[in-house]
Amino acid sequence: DTAVSQTPKYLVTQMGNDKSIKCEQNLGHDTMYWYKQDSKKFLKIMFSYNNKELIINETVPNRFSPKSPDKAHLNLHINSLELGDSAVYFCASSLRMGLAKNTDTQYFGPGTRLTVL
Amino acid sequence: DAKTTQPPSMDCAEGRAANLPCNHSTISGNEYVYWYRQIHSQGPQYIIHGLKNNETNEMASLIITEDRKSSTLILPHATLRDTAVYYCIVRAPRNFNAGNMLTFGGGTRLMVKP
Image (cartoon, rainbow over all chains, first blue to last red; front, side):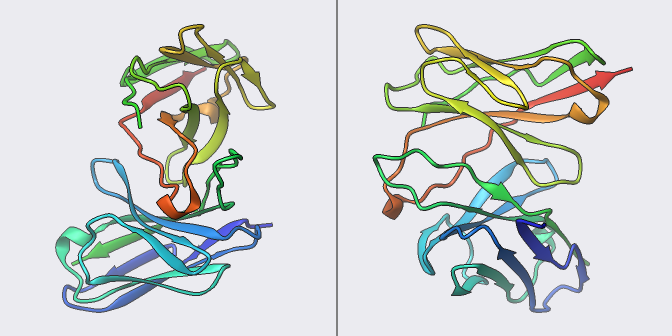
């Protein structure tokens, strides 16, 4: 049973195109995330969504627009793709966290390798 | 979140214990120590976390020093499949409105050798 799934696994496209990456989790979590891992292998948070509401946008260009149709899905749409967008994108999810509870384990998807030519 | 320092790489013989150190000298009282790993071409995987006491689960043990300024992740019997980058992350519980993102450093690249 796949907990966090992403499609596609590989995405090769030309500069200037618009593309989407889909993410689904079947864990019943209500917080989802997008991370970017660049060629130097550093993982950085891009967005955090809690119950379909954007919580964090870590200085990501507005060409990137996350869309959450429901709690189980957080898709990433990218407009006008640039060479520097080439990276591996990871979706993750976790339970909503309250101050009194530490259930902060995040579950990651397998990643989508985006190559912009 | 407190900064962590890890050696960039380590080797371990298959079947032996792998001990991965992490320094977090500026850790605050309410910050937890988390360990994740990333096997090549896969997403990061949660391993274990702790606050003060040592913790053990089916994957690993976490030893936190009494002053909490450092910790060690122990893989008791390393296998070739444990070859991965291991990340030590220190962070406090967050109110859900603040977001729960993880801040990854460079990690330790563990190579388990036959």
